[in-house]
Image (tube, rainbow over all chains, first blue to last red):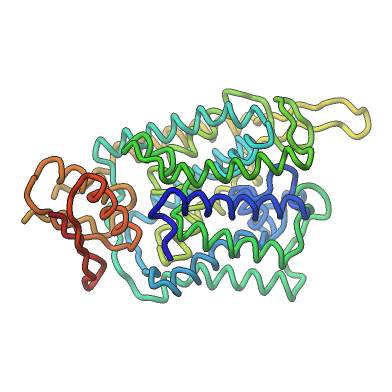
Length: 364
Length: 67
């Protein structure tokens, strides 16, 4: 089965993933978050006690399902390859950058598209930053950027992250060891089994279609190739139809309750860092989970970097807050990016430039 | 025959190296890659540019022969 050899198949993969996201949103996932890699890794990091933000702690079965879905489908179709050794610690840092940028904006590129489909104009503003970030990454690639070669390694190495994810799932299903939010976004979720199945389907489709939000724009800039953008476009259309049909489409900037803010510069810079770091790491947060599932220990290290980044964001108050209505005064309280979040983001962008222009491809 | 060794490189490097080689050389090019999706990307790129393609499995990945 190959979903990446025609635009039609790619569009179908996008539609299926869009339907999964729409279903999960309908059955309880937070409004216009539906299926956000950064938010869900952040929630899972909270469930594991890596940070103490009580509103965002829940081991999201979607994340577990994505990795396991990619693992199972790649093993079944002989695409599983246990590889490692392409500058793992630089990838760890890129994972942290991706997460800090995402939590300043409040969402990964997948959620940016979902927010765009719900009429959130902040996400459209952030898209400018994302495209510029991807463009900067492409410029670095053209200048010879490379993190070096990965090598085939012991088969078990690539299976460690999927095994850890399975372990988290078992802990969640049969023990009370993991933390779980009682209020806030972490408490809003579809039933466990539904989230898990959704994640497995999304993971399998993403593995087969090579779905990547950074790759979609990167390929357009670099190769004038619109294949990967087709998947994203069809996912956007499905979510747009769902949002309009269920009355969730609200066009505007300061919409309360959707976990977003309107600090335009920081929305742009947040997604700039994500786009830039994702191109350097070879894929967006979703793609990193999928590559980790199909055996890449380097991507697994990037995922660990995202967990560390999520913990840093909430332990040190870097994450932005969303616009909300004060329940007592009924006043609109604008979401904002905290001072240290802005400082951290500027450092992240500087680090991206350092990585981008100091790691060169070996001469053939 | 020119050889492009793109084994173990992250996307889109295998494709960039292939594009560079096809632009530079009119003679057949052999591209070595590790991952199945990279093999497919390289094959598709070559076909889209009017070249004939034949692939085979190697010990640590794939060899894509572009004529």
